[in-house]
Image (cartoon, rainbow, N blue to C red; front, side, top):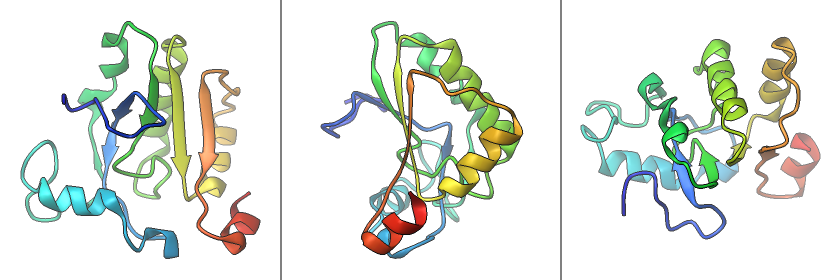
Length: 147
């Protein structure tokens, strides 16, 4: 399996222009991305010392342009695009890539929907028909809060 290919059954590819995160809720307790980052420490863009530190990968912004066949793409499967350490300007660059590749469907999942709304509103970003902006929830209390 190539790096962007995935065994996640509800998506075709993963695209990680940023990696790393910090726990924000009980839903982060058994984070698969953190476990995988530790396994990949020192390789594949994961720092050896702190493999799950938020790390930007601007070289990956052009990756979706190389996928000519329409794909369902899970954005930042190894991070949260709306983590406070991901600069607004970088998020906007990710959004520009998604806007410029309308043949793909992007799945953006966050545990920080309030930041998603704030950042997108601050850049006056129009909704993109090819972007599914979603929040993850682990129980009714977080559903009430995040939705």
